[in-house]
Length: 362
Ligand code: ADP
Image (cartoon, rainbow, N blue to C red; front, side, top):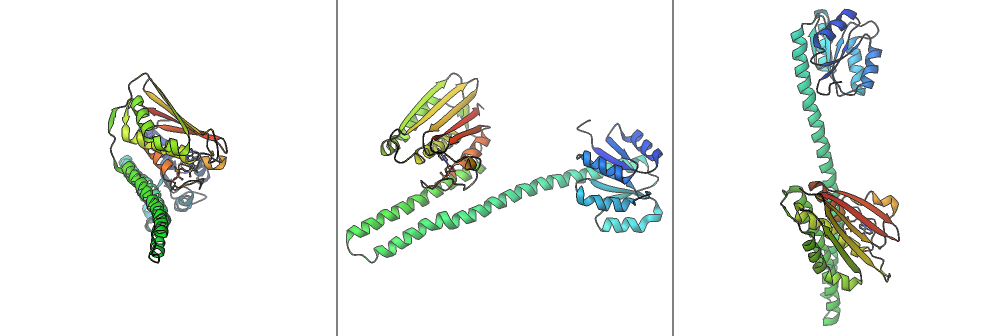
């Protein structure tokens, strides 16, 4: 079947009309024909790409207008056109007013009437399909907005409420020591808020920004990671080892790549087993034939099987061991989409987690 041709179903109990329709239009369109409405329904069920249905009104078992209004519920997509003689004008007006048919073509039909109806119906079909896609996108945006409203009322409000209550306690003290302790509490809350706003910034950066491509040397990336996590390594007593094998040039957006790596690495630090002695994080960069394979692996708390597929969702959290908003991996995923990358996760609860990224050079 020709994928570019518009698919049409023609329903008529007069065999000559079916043959004539097929003979006239089969070169320009993909034509299905049916001599009764039962057969027509079967064809509709088997051919989801049918865009336009022509149906004769005077059919023996079921009137064309009844058939078209009946299948509208099951098959809302195809554009419905009624073929009818002048005598049935009332039926036509009624059916158009009720939205059961798109238009009618007078019988016996002329080729040019059929062709102009097909063109018109096809334009309408394309416009409504685009509208459906836009509506879906809009629905997704609304859902995210909804999650945002919820998250703002919790993740932003909670730290603020913490600061406010610490202030009101502090106002009741004269000595420096308890005030100092309350200041530490406030600092914790403000840091949390700051982290939240930082992830929010990434979220918007990912939505709007254009790609900024440059050559990337993964040895330099490794050096800056080592430098950046120096303090975390000491504080958490985690062994971070990084290996780099780069045999070819690699071009991508460095800030997106850094966003991805920092989220994965900071999670690998955050979700360590707190009392373990041999905590490690391994990062591996391999670039060959224009493809970077990056592994970030830890022997931390791991992720339960049932949670693994949800961790890339906005605001999803599978653990409360560490502070976080559930933004990180969502941002990782958005960044990967922008640079055409893919991610695989292997994780076992209590054993550790391994993220493998595949990123093609741009
Ligand atoms: P969060 O702000 O909660 O860290 P993320 O989107 O970065 O949000 O991660 C989502 C969830 O995935 C986390 O809450 C955590 O349960 C889980 N997770 C992510 N990385 C790891 C890891 N390296 N080890 C264990 N769990 C992880």
